[in-house]
Image 1 (cartoon, one colour):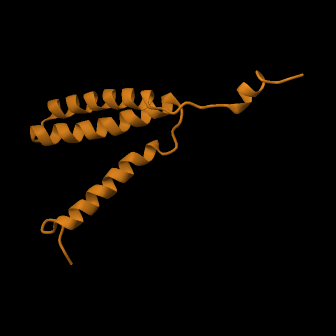
Image 2 (tube, rainbow, N blue to C red):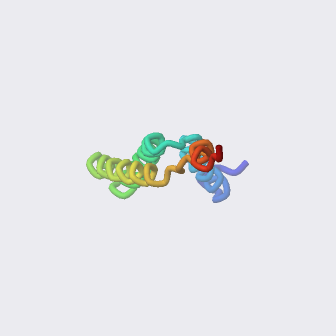
Image 3 (cartoon, rainbow, N blue to C red):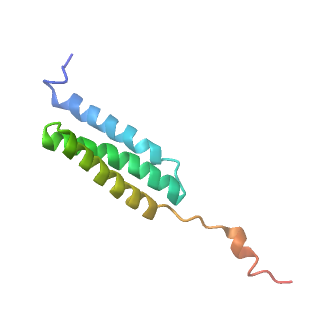
Length: 97
């Protein structure tokens, strides 16, 4: 059995699992509000992780990274929400009586 500290392959698998689980909240989000909330959560977690790694675990940079990540994630999530297209709405325009 390969230990996590010695092998590179288990680290890659673990990183892939963490990335997929982190992206899972956005799987069923369609409205801009839902996407903004999911993006803020993912961005906040990622920003806190990067801030903690970069500062060696100091609270100030970790919280700053979380705030910046959450703001960026919320903006990106809201902007990238898919637009709903309704065929029913346009069907009435082209109705011939």
